[in-house]
Length: 94
Image (cartoon, rainbow, N blue to C red; front, side, top):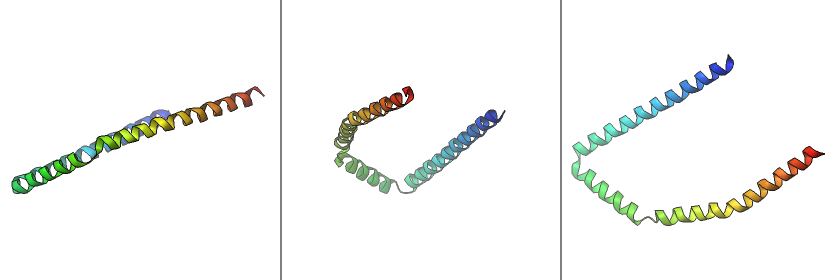
């Protein structure tokens, strides 16, 4: 019975979090729409500036570097994991 209560509480928590996030998103969206309607030229200028900055950032280069680092770190991590599992199996046999 307790596991059902925990599951219900967890589901309720998740639903509340989703509802809160949706409300916040709707509020940000409404504020953005109001700003654009009140200041169309400023909004256009901000949009162009943001696009220019995003274009100039080396996003793909950074993501490629992060992926390479993760792949290089994967080999030692797997080696350590395998060694740990072997040690645990050897301890269980004793």
